[in-house]
Image 1 (cartoon, rainbow, N blue to C red):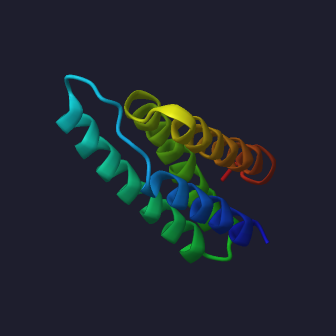
Image 2 (spheres, rainbow, N blue to C red; image 1 turned 135 degrees about the horizontal axis):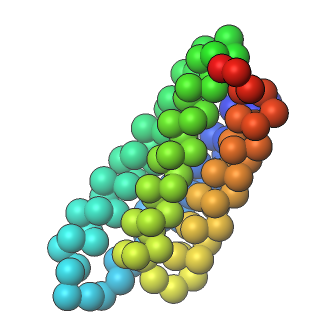
Length: 111
C-alpha cells in the first residue's frame, strides 16, 4: 500500500514537472541541466521504491535514500522552477519526504 501511494505521488510529480518552465536567470543552462538531472533522480527514486525488498532492513535503506533524494530535488526545484509548477512540485516533494521520514522514525529504529 505504501509503495502504490508513493508511486502515485511520483507519477503526479513527474507529470507536473514535465511541462514546467525553468526560471529565467543568467544561469539558465545550469538550471536546465539541474532540472533534467533532478527529473532523472526522481524517476530513479520511484523505481527504487517499487523494487524495495520485503524485509524491513532493505526498505529502510531505500527509504533513507529516498528522503535524501527528495531534499536534493526540493533544492533544485526551488531554485530553478517558477510559478505554480514550482509550488506544486515542491509541495509534492515535501509531502513525499515527510511521509517517508515518518515511516523511518516508526519502522526503522535500529535498522
